Length: 511
Image 1 (cartoon, one colour):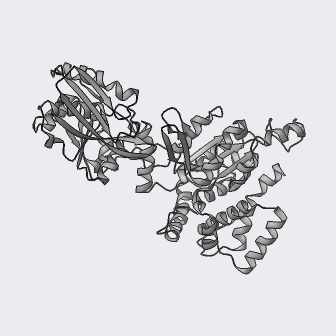
Image 2 (cartoon, rainbow, N blue to C red):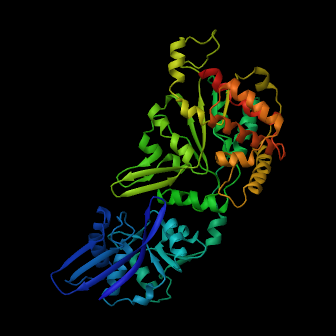
Image 3 (cartoon, rainbow, N blue to C red):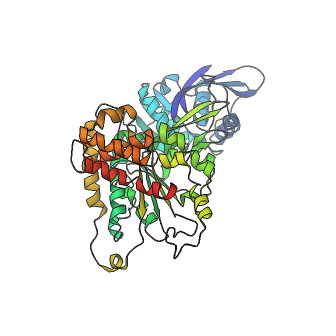
């Protein structure tokens, strides 16, 4: 007898529904799985046989064939255990084929018949809802994840016995538990965030961070040790606008694929903040592996990637960021296919100006000019050119630390950031753009038009600073954000002057 079960698999951040076809016939006893299965999928034969035996279902000595369709897509992971087991039950006549119509099944089986959580339930459930699936049956630990897709009924089961009871129509308590999507979406875990009020002085740094947050611009902070670079960078998430519903689904999908959404307990609404160590490898940063998985820069999607001690990273590792910073995505090619992961993040870097950290203060700095140059050149020109804002952190004054003055809180700064964000939402309504930093060259011409006086001003600055075309466009995008913070519809010379000031520090140290 033949049975067909709907399951799913993840490829990059995209998902495909997989039809698990099971046929049992007379012949030499065998159990084979075809359809480009990976090693984890092939091992499902042993898990399913033992799990069914331990719940009282003994397989007859017959020929069991399982096909995973479409057969030209590689299948990896352990989510096919439950569909294969249920397919065998239907083929044996213990369940009806109608019981799985419009139902998506996912789950890994333990040898006792227990259902263990799997990765990627959220993107697969979203794809199922788009294709008309009405409910999903998943391990109890993943039920809340499926429930994040409001169009689906998500039912969690603890073991294969509960799955069989549910599909056979039993109403007993063991027949699975449906999870409310609304409850999980509202019960979002929010970490306690650091506050800007903890930072004394450094008004220039705070202003640069506010502009960067308002337009989602890349930010580089240069300064001596102890000047507050890291302290400020760690507080940037506290002034960023929350994720929109669509952005939350994008970010949560990536974390689901990596198996990291389980610790969050709900749809993510706070922007990610990733702070990798400088010894990170290129593969860990960009993603990859035999079975490609998202890297750190994809986990930072719609959030902040903070690289502390920027020159300590290997230069070839930093240069991996060049293409993602422009394309907002990472492409990984393998023999099994090409995988694309989103990587639209805000890059924040912090660094000392020299190995000892005190250049250009020659009374304290003992580095030779060659050592300073070699240290700074660890950050390549193309990476530097992609930093919208470069600002210098001046040494803290004693009066700032002891004044007792009440500093602005993150909530106060976030109010201004949110006001600028609303202006951008109105400007970019109906387009693919979210923030000013997302604008391309054509968008800059459309949304950052300059008056005659401002155009002449930028012409002089372009020649004096020997700007590249990319740097020129980035200055205009930053000026557009500064104008948004001021509530202005047009970009004035003051906005352009402030934006140009944020390009002075890189010219000071690298030219």
